Amino acid sequence: MANEFLVSVADAILRDPTTKAGIAYGKANLSSAFNITTQKTEVRGGIGNGLLYTYFHDRMIEISIEQAIFSAEVVALNAGTSVASGTVSVLKTECLVLSASGSGTCSETPTDVVNVFQSDGTIQDLTAVGSVITASGADSQVVDVIYPYSVSADRITVDAATPPSIVDLTLQADVRDNEGTLLYKLQINVPSFQISGNYNMALAANGVSSQSLDGTSNVVENTTDCTTGDYYATVTWIAEAGTAIAVNSIAATPATMDFSEAEIPESQNITVLGIRGGLYTNKTITTSCSFVMDATSSEGFTVGLHTGTVTTGSSGSASHVGTVDISYYDATNGTLYDTVDLTMSA
Figure 1: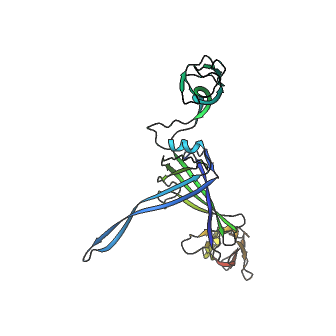
Figure 2: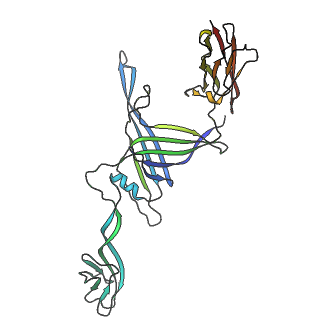
Figure 3: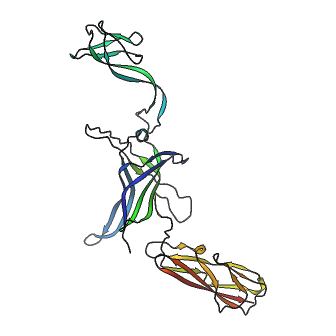
């Protein structure tokens, strides 16, 4: 059996937890981590204070994603807000060559004080007339000017009270074998991912900034069945196209089908389970099986080739018995077999 490896880094898919509307798709991640932690309480007693029982509690799922690409979405999610578009006030920085009279024309129209930085370290704070400024004693100088102006832009406001966002987060990574063959896409879905709100923008002269998104999973109510409890996340192995999940044996149910002569024509269905063993649950493979009547079977029964539906004809009687031969081809274990016996009572 080939070894399997979870390789490289996961892509991150972020959606609205309620509407499932897309928020972001991160495909340039530097690292991604999925951690499950659990606390425990020991129950001890008796001579020597022996360990009687260990109660596990406070399970938590923590996820951390580090991206190479800078995006407004990550900043907004940590701030618990959206990226707003509109007319805002920003600062303009530019270099001007002043005239012999110390005047110059800004490329934008200043809306407030203009700061003029001269080469000798002098700073003048001026009021522009339209887009024109005049700096005293700076005749024919090259100066840096900084001033506010209005522009249409995207903006995120990080306020003091809004909590970080909650999103539906899916991590997707590749699982390969020791020959490099892609076997599965591993998907980890966290339906209610609470972003921590901890954000760090680190800039370096000899590199680019990376940004991270981390947080914890909130418990989600299970609404699909009565056996699974509330949960934090699901982890799914999606087989590549043409790769079926291997099974070790098959089991057809019921093992014996009894029909009544008084109710013919009558139909009953066979269900076939693929047995995987270990911690893996069984898999229903009925429509992937072949069903044929055994050559020694009596007349009176027919079976659908790939449906598992057994039907009695109008000529059936209490003397009729039969056997359905079932086969399933598994790429790992070859062809697997089972049978179902058919009887008819008066």
